[in-house]
Image 1 (tube, rainbow, N blue to C red):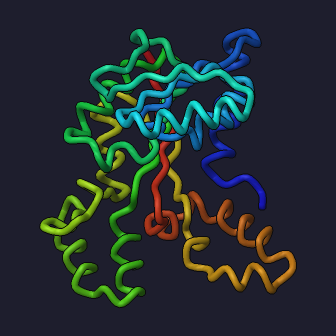
Image 2 (image 1 turned 135 degrees about the horizontal axis):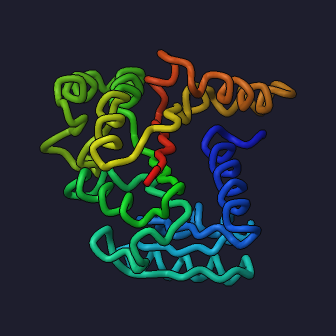
Length: 239
């Protein structure tokens, strides 16, 4: 499959960062980076990567992945209160799957914004509240779908919901702007791909590439963007 919308944007951002730095490796800070799903490929692509992650088990897996990939990653056990980098040091900060689980999303994003160098960017990838409603309704979980619709935070309170909140487009834009960042791009990730059965891709030659192309074409088109499984923002620090 072709690169998805998020990878395409990050590839362009890192190329621009490398140019700004005169060919030096872009400095990437991956907060809540877990076992290195994003960090290891970025390190393999020549970035200087720091991962901040509270889970020691995830960090152990990260070290194993990095060793197997032959890359070096600076791993820090901590959270948004202890990023392990100086203010204004990172060219790109990743907050992928982070803001849904922290106690204070505005404070966390403000901390990440402070870590970005002027001209750098924060990449935010979050769960979409409206997609969660649709997916639960399709799965027959009608009561949960209605509860998510009625809860402004997009949380299934009183259940084992692993997320403290889910986002919609206006709420995510507001959060980013209040952190002192400018919204350069807001797109959807997983618009139709999460709904297409695997058997369709397996039995139709060319279907996987066609689906990837559809995802890219739909990523920035509202209302399709607004019901994607995840919302992605590239936010710029301008000063």
